[in-house]
Length: 113
Image (tube, rainbow, N blue to C red):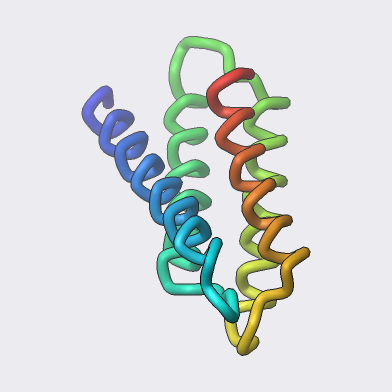
């Protein structure tokens, strides 16, 4: 079970890197768009995060449901924005900033909570 947990954490971190990296390369881009790294990064994070929570639930240690609930809600909001905007020719400045700040928020919750 430890190997599976470590593997899912690894996949989750790759999803986070793809999401953040996909957003970061759009800083100077004109127009800003939802690229494949953003789409696949958030989907990878959602799937691996839910699987990780399932493994944590099956263990002996208590799980902080508030923390994972906040992370899930933030990830779902990111996913909703990404899926709604991915077919549009350009991402607004506010939409881009929202995605970037929500991504950083989710990383901060994971690290500091």
